[in-house]
Image (cartoon, rainbow, N blue to C red; front, top):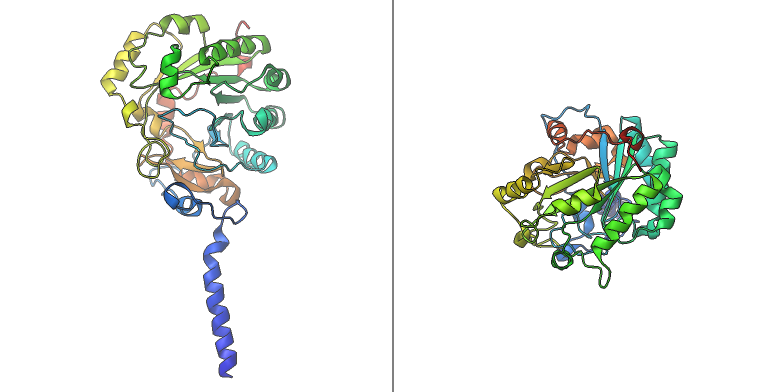
Length: 349
């Protein structure tokens, strides 16, 4: 009888040891070591806290899905770095996007990392087509560094894409190299101009994103911006995010890129004649975006770092969004809701 009790006790202890492993996420149960020797499991279990002031009924009108963290550039201030190589299977990504549509998503923006690296752009192309053709979203956009986009991609998927936003922080190639946007012998600015023409040719609205930092804060971009003529020029103040571009666990250390609020405002003053300029200070950026990471978890940036919710694929959108830290008032204040469908922009292609 004592032997029987001992066996039962040992079995019970064995089950207790297994319990922590049953919560592993969709990475095949493999614990991968991250920065500083910490596992991604430990990182994933640090979830954000629910905001008591945030309504449970927040509608994810505009969502940014960073489906990959991998990138071919090495921007020194990057605040969404290559801490994992994980990408959801296509059908799982589509399932999550369908869930978001069901609760009110109108605009999806695909970002990274660099979205055109995975499957040479086929993955993001299929997601763009799915969101426009199947989900019939009013707006589908991509943010890219532009280095891997081909005209073949535009021919196949351009009709489903409303807006292409290309990141360009300087029109001086030496500064781009200092920042980390160097392409070897290729010119980042030439790639930008080629993409601008393809957007005209294939009916895609062209948007420009620039991060203002220590190396470009004194640059005058008026002439070049007017020549490119984007529908929007988003001008971001370089932002510090713990664990991404600052701190022991970070892959980047962006302190040397930081500028003051006064310097940022001087840059804005220098370009006040650009009607499409949309400025975003650190205060406006931090909490006014609904960000989904590669596991489809909302990232809460309220505490200066990215604390993840549980995946919408596991707990649903309404449960996960409570932990997003999303500031809807700031989203509207920074001009987050705008004419974002190319059918409504009425552009002269």
